[in-house]
Length: 124
Image 1 (tube, one colour):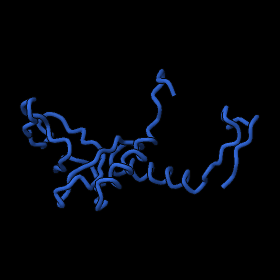
Image 2 (image 1 turned 45 degrees about the vertical axis):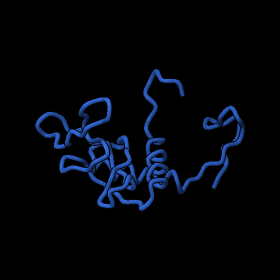
Image 3 (image 1 turned 30 degrees about the vertical axis):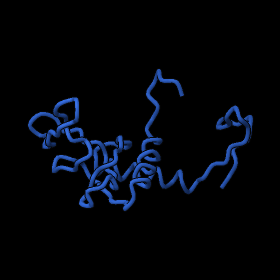
């Protein structure tokens, strides 16, 4: 692990910031893999219900539309029918991974979504 020093191009206003080079390399490798699997470097991730019938899996958000969208509509109490966003269907992109734990799934989704690029004009 190296440290970014104040006064360098990478310095942040809080002073010296540790940089985990192994994590940065892993993020870059995952982004390249996702280009081939999903078609984009930084897809938005979601918690999914897998064969365990619990919200213990993770997968990229399904962006299928119209006739390609195979998601069921499920009843939402007080709101009628809505697209099943936690299910995994044939139209959903890979990878879909089981974590075995709802807490781990939620944590991984937060970590993966933290890598999303900040859109221009948004506050950092």
